[in-house]
Length: 195
Length: 180
Image (cartoon, rainbow over the protein chains, first blue to last red):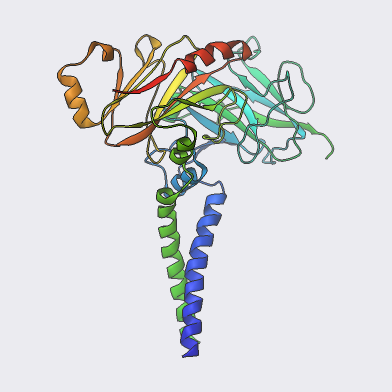
């Protein structure tokens, strides 16, 4: 008799506890199915649509998100530099290269919860393609970090890890066209301030 | 011993069942989804600002600090929803979400006639009625047909720099969300 009760309790604890804890864990890790990635840049084109997987649907409902539609734009997230090291708010980075076809694009820095990190007053929190300084061959270099730099610079000073968010607006990548890895900027770490 | 192993295996199967059930129930029972949070801010057919340029956007993770946006909840029970705004801004885009916050339709200023934001949302039945004799005021409208009875419209506008913020502000403030 006692053995039955203990085994039933074990079964209930395992199924309820395990089931609920695993959902909680899955919703808190930011992984998602249906990701497309080009180098370090990752996007979730299905997020927020009826085609999204149940995990991202549940996460979005919980976070009260209204994500960008396919005719609006598509955000790409980078969490590491091109050598695979986590992006840090106290380090300086250089972004080189190009960006795939889009009407315009914006770049900003966010914390791990994806809230934008605001720059100090009178400094750029974000850059967009229509204000960039470009070289004669249309290439550009963007510097992101705590140390002031000439040219295109986003001022970031944060003790924590950061995420670079590159959002392409009115882009065919959201629906039909596929890009190539080389179409996206490379992220190079150029130095760090001491922690 | 055998019964213990049996119970553990059964517990694992149970955990999988509970996992799937909870996962599928979260969207339906989430008390703080976008709809609920918008309801706290504004009544239906009332335009409310959800993000300002440079600030955080409570309704979109990874939202662009160079964008300002407004939202309006609509219901199609007694009439169609008409959403309009006018102004010359560099870029605007609109998304229509269903009651659960899923994006069902989106477009941008290149889709619109004369780049004017003029959107009509109707159910298929209302659409049939509307098409019989299309009023002139809808001649330039973009029509979205949906089976959903309730939903959210969000308009987002690009603020390239601070000198644009007044113009974009005026565009978003000109927005009207009406039941007709």
